[in-house]
Image (cartoon, rainbow, N blue to C red; front, top):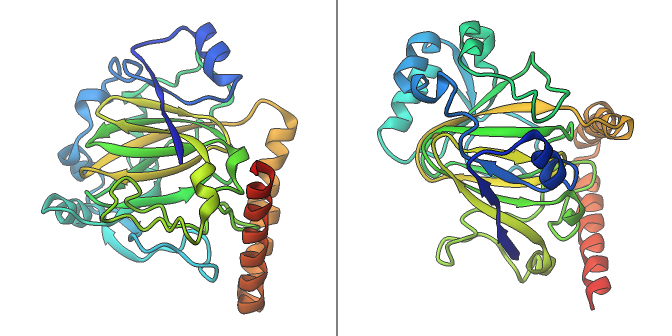
Length: 295
C-alpha cells in the first residue's frame, strides 16, 4: 500500500475547507472543531450509562463477514450499560454500529453544533454514535449512501486507513456490496496482520491515507471513501452525515441503498453458492485488470 498521512489543521475557514478538501474530495483532520462543543468535556461513559444504560443495543464482533452474510447482521445483543462494563474490563473486540443514541436521549443534540459553515446537506435526523472496545475492528468498506462524513472522536484512540472510491478494484471490492474481499485486520503489524498480499496483490498498489484519531479530532471523509478502523483504546465517536450536492451523487446513493443491496440480499438467499462464486470471480478479474493497467 502507498499511504500518505492525512492533513491535520487546528482550524480552517469555510473557503479553505471547500477549496482544499471538500471539492477535491480529500480527507482532513480538524483538531479544534469540536473543542467548543459541550460534548467535548461532557460526553463520557458514565454520562451515557446514566442516560441510555438500559437501552438494548446490537453488537458486532471482529469476524469478517463472508459473501453469504446479510449486510449489518448483529452478532449479539446487550444493554448499553452491560456493554460499557464489558469493554471497561480490558480489550474486547465488540463494537456498536450505527447507534442512534439521540432517539433515546434527545437532549444530547444540544451538546454539539452542526457545522453548516463547512458544508450543506446534513441529515440532521440521523447523527450516529459508533462505539468500540479496545482491539475491535471496523472492516474495510465505504458507506452505502455515499454521504460526506464528519467523524469526531470523543474517547480513546482509533487508527483509520482511508482510500478514495476509485481505488475500489485494487481493494478487491465485492460486486453488489460495499465491502472488500481482503481482510485488512492489524495491517500495520507484520506479526498480526491478516492482509494476504499473495492472494490480493493489487492491494500493494492502492494509494490511500492513514491517521490516528484522538479525543476531539474531527475527520472529514469525502463521500464514497473506503475506510478501515481499529480501536486502539475503548472509545466512541459521532458521525454527522451530509448528502452529496450533485443529483448524480444522490441517485448513486439511492441505487446502492434500494437497488444494489436488495439484489445482493435476494441472491444470497436464493442462490448463495453460485452468487458467491460469481462475485469472487468478478472481484479477482477486476483486480487483475487494474494490475495489468499498471504494468
